[in-house]
Image (cartoon, rainbow, N blue to C red; front, side, top):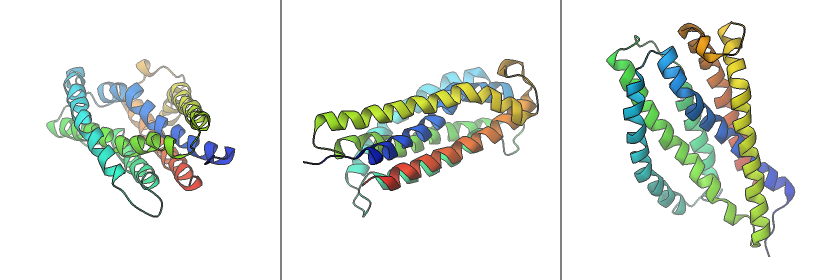
Length: 216
């Protein structure tokens, strides 16, 4: 009967911290960054969000099929967790950093739209194999439930880090006092989110690597 040690359970669960750093940045703060820092119209989000979710409905099952057919020395889940997290981290950084497009330009809108969709695709690359991995840990339902519970707890930790520290970090890296994002200038938001996104992206890769390398 297969069981999983506490160390492996914790090693696996840590990966959820990184996934939720990216998830929290995208869903909690991207709209603020795009509209207040880059000057993109809120109407853009009303259009791109349902389109991206529509594509996710097609992309998610496709990714599930690819994972099921993957055969490597590391298994079928861990390579995608590490690879997906790495690519997702790069996309996250690009989303929160303007490479030089003029505010309101067509190029900026295209840039944001492409990366918006790519974030969802690359997040799926890591997220689906991560949570699909739970049943492989143990043959006992009680043990599998504990693995899932630990991962959910780490997921909440990742969300908490983003919720608590993002306004503080953006203000710090933007060179201002206070932590109210609505009162910050576009320049402050651009600098602050740009640097903070790099840190969260590094965290995503770091925790995904721990998760992938510490599990069997």
